[in-house]
Image 1 (cartoon, rainbow, N blue to C red):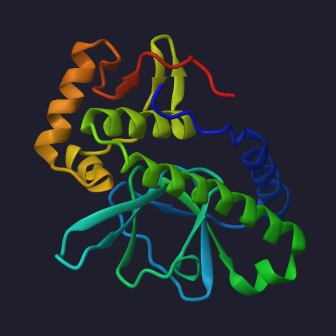
Image 2: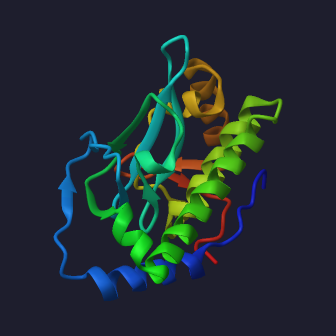
Amino acid sequence: MVFSPAPQADSRGAFRQLLEASYQRRGLVHLAAGSSVPLLKKSVWVVVRGMVRLSTCSFQGDELLVGLAGPNEPFGEPLTSLEAYEARALTACDLLCLSCDEIARSPHLAMAVLQGLGARYRQSEALLALLGLRRIEDRVRGFLELIAHDYGQPCDQGLRLDLRLTHQEIANALSTTRVTVTRALGHLRDQGWLQLDQQRRLVISHLPAGRA
């Protein structure tokens, strides 16, 4: 295995329980896949269901994937220093909006947000580490392992990725080209490490069919 992230089940579970206990009656914002998430100066979004893609633009105008926010993970303008920062629903999403003031007033909520940020921070570190790998195939394999461990769903063949990332989005995350990513994915499928299910969702075959 190229990359083996540490399990985050405990912190995510604690965050989910806190949200369910304290904010179960609050209305959620539902967004369809592909929708832009409005970024507010004094509010933080928390993903309840679905997946949000976080991106920015390079000086050359290229879109760069800087992270993903999944269930129980926070994101928003107060949590970034990037000027050209965009959040877009990668799948249908239910989001919870929390103001910075209410987070500051609640130590338990602030700790839960911090735990969610910790998961995002570890993901960012892992993505940076992948860029140090010389072989693009190793970068692609490591990237898919990271996403599968964090967000994959157990199935008979391994871990299934319900989110759909284009070859270009993977290339943006790994500082390479779409053609190179397509070639690497083809090699991984030829090796039997990667499969496509009937809905053409990616399945990582050589990972345990369950998460720690």
